[in-house]
Picture 1 (cartoon, rainbow, N blue to C red):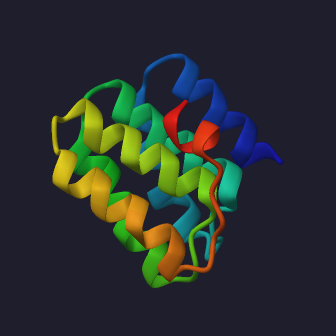
Picture 2: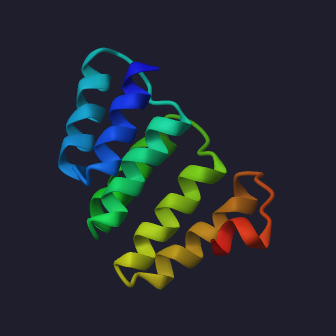
Length: 109
């Protein structure tokens, strides 16, 4: 709960670099970020147009397990902020590969 609250506060404060530091601190503590923490970190990066950092975080997270829809959508949004429509479309297609159903309103919001 504590890491989630910190991640959300950092996201709201547009502190994307501190979000990445939080992720590193969790790794050092042998903790895996849950979906809420992951989504907050990726969203913070995307809102700061640090889309490359968002993609790096997404890549690390997906190596450790299956991403959830919120994390994929946050990463799609970050890629869109960086005008990387090709990556956003690849992520949209990955929903099916990961066995996630999507509703149009979730993806387009």
